[in-house]
Each structure stands twice: as C-alpha cells, then as structure tokens.
Length: 96
Image 1 (cartoon, rainbow, N blue to C red):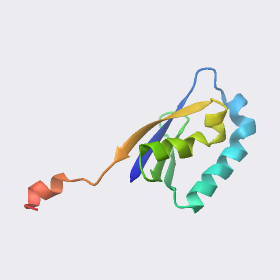
Image 2: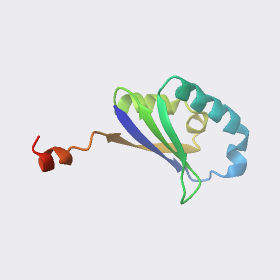
Image 3: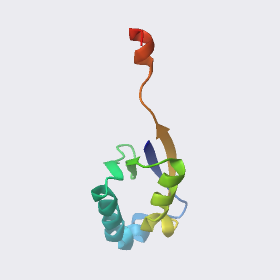
Image 4: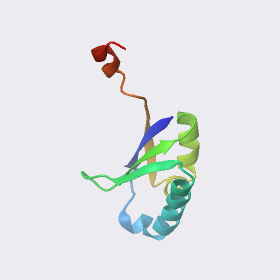
C-alpha cells in the first residue's frame, strides 16, 4: 500500500532547535529509502517541511515507521497520513 505522509511542525519548533537532529534524520530517511519503504521524498513548496510517499502494509505500519524518525521522537514534527489507491474512475469511462 502507498501512503502519503505530510509533516507538521509542532508549536515551539524552530530551525535552530531541529538543526542538531537533521543529520540523524537524514540517515533514517536514507535507510528507509534504501529499504524501499520511502519511495518518494519531497520538500514542500509552500512552507518548510517534507512530504513522503511510503510503501508499507497499511496506515499503522506507516505510523510506526515514521515514529522512529528523530524529529518525531523529539516532538518537533508529526505527520498526517493519507492512504493512496489506484485511480479507478478510468474503469467507468472505458467500460471495465
């Protein structure tokens, strides 16, 4: 299952506070990328933040994986999770 995870900065978080954790955060992201769990990673264009597309069993699995990130553990960020599925309206348009 693909899951879209969008981060949210928690109150009181600043770049100065998270700076010491960013290398460790990147190492965790790289490990998940190499394992095929993080399929796509993006920076938000409208504000500081990240968007990740994960390949995992379900939403609970995605939450468990993201809970291991240092910025989540330190309570600087949290994520909104959206399950993704194939775009099915094509079938109704083409009779399948």
